[in-house]
Image (cartoon, rainbow, N blue to C red; front, side):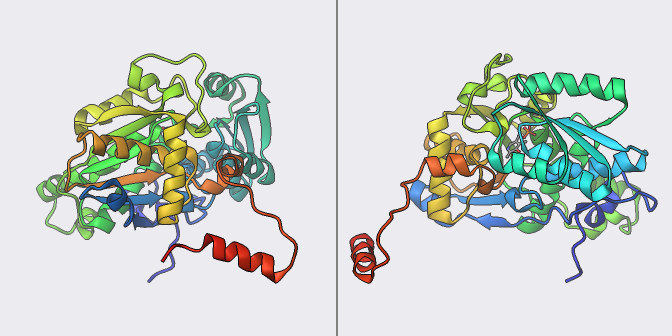
Length: 374
Ligand SMILES: *Cc1c(COP(=O)(O)O)cnc(C)c1O
């Protein structure tokens, strides 16, 4: 297999780049699509569930897909600095890609409300980290104004190149499964990703006919196996931060899933469009449901995602129980970020390690006590 060089190189003919574009990449994308073998049995449902584990991107979240495009295009346009507001992962990705490109990075984060790993990343990659006494929505408003007055390039998902990079997740799912799944579930925060997924699926599904109408079978789109259909898109929000579910902004969003602690999503309309066109829906999960799903996934499948990502699992669990997702279906859940991003929340849910003297009998006793029953 050829050396994988990142999603821009991989999908060059589907992205707004040309041979002179200076690609800024950390070999993002190409993440595993893991079939969850134990979960359907646990739920007592005859379905196939796959996790698209975006936590295995270079900075540990799907934000790398958008950031490789946004930073590449910013550098192409001559930018010397980028700025973003973030609940954590955007700042980690922006900082890393800016470091790679040799440009400056400014990030606005809500004070005390970002997961430890994400803060460490932004700091370590050399971004100027600005904590604001406010939430993500305040940050979003401020970076748009600051980008305008200072001329620094804005790399939040309202940057049109972000969704271009993010749409490639759908290409990879289709390549892995041979077609689109029946359902695609994901968390919804600022709401850019659900629209990007939908754009990717739509591109793959419609070019089949478009390409045939315009070419003799030799156009670039004929190289890949295209999709015959598009999935039903299902978006989940945390109960304390569910503006789209309830149809109105939330003034003070609160949830343990800090990546989706957003009260007034920037891409609200695009998200609604994806839901409507696909015949999907939005629903909410409580923090308890989110944390239970995170732990269940870690302990029954060996996949450790961050709380926001686990909402896909919490959500489909409920929708399967309620019969909203039908038996026999193939479901893909995007696990947007890695569990290591937020060690505090993970440790807080688990029993503390035991401490014993360094003596064999103690160890033996604990092993015997805790062995699975025959
Ligand atoms: C950014 C992020 C989300 C939300 O994505 P949107 O495009 O803002 O809806 C979900 N989960 C994780 C881990 C994220 O970093």
